[in-house]
Image (tube, rainbow, N blue to C red):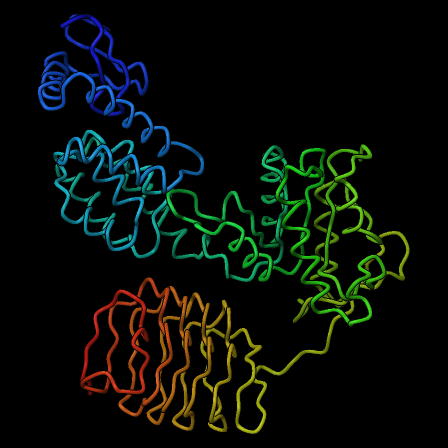
Length: 502
């Protein structure tokens, strides 16, 4: 064998001698014993021939680059993994990348059946990738796989235990859950990441929660297939938008300017009186989402900057993070210093800061009309619905991030569409024994709900009632078989169903 070997079994890069007995990949830096490099080289060439061996090396390098990129492309990973697997059917790296590109149960099944010893050499690439892309439904499978690696070599793989625990804490805390209500939506250019991180850290140190796409949107293969839709969800669940304004973000190449601000503008107009629908420049601030412009550098007169000028018309910019914090607090709090129950109304009448917080009247915890629970406004983790309620209306608890347990009285007959959808901390539901109908997506995206009991009385069940419930382990069902009035896709979550439960 020459002093230059053809390809690294790890990433497909070029191998060169670094000592009489070792060689090193010039692409990923991994070192090999010359004997093992020889064996791999001979196997690949005998199996594939010269031309295919070169193609395999290129596929490996593409996969290596993609899983180490900031935002891996699931389509690229899946396609290259498929081609690599076609050439070498038992290639662990190809099988792993393919499973990871699909995620969910397919990834879980692969990790559960994967041999720790045969995959050990890839662990220092595979595990960091998993930590960046895993979802709540992968927690157990990834944990078991890491434990098997640790059992084979505690010294080498023990270091991944702490990283795994940190990721689990983030998943359980809802860091990556875009529907969790937060105080501030940060709009920015990636070129200003350092300033944005500093601002985010400052605000959160002062108990102002932030949505920060670089942190809160999961990165990785198919982690956010519809990135713009994820941004919309986040904006809908924040109270104040902060635009980190610079020559980078005030550019037509920046999504913050061309998509995020226009999206908020469209929402403003949607809820505004009809007289303002086509005259945004005359729309009073009280109809606009509270906003702050954090100015990093001066305007240059570029045509694109007219978008931000119009968006912040009538609102002074801030030039320090301290000033940004003070402005946000004015939006979020009442004059007495108490937390405002809803976003305060903003008036353009004051001088200087041009913003004055006017708290709205506190709403009751339960808004009930003629037996229908229209809306739950409370913040209690344990909710007992009053016995006067006969129907829980659509979205009554939608996106409530406080409720942990809810007791539904036997007086309730109907649960409406998305009634509890997005209750990310909900872990316990006591159902009404007289419940007759559960509308579509009633408990969708309740990512912490481990089990639920559906009483025998339920005759109608809508589509996707439990879709997105990543932690759901068991559904106990009073009926022995699916009732005729239930939608064929009523569940849409991967869970064990126990029929005929009493």
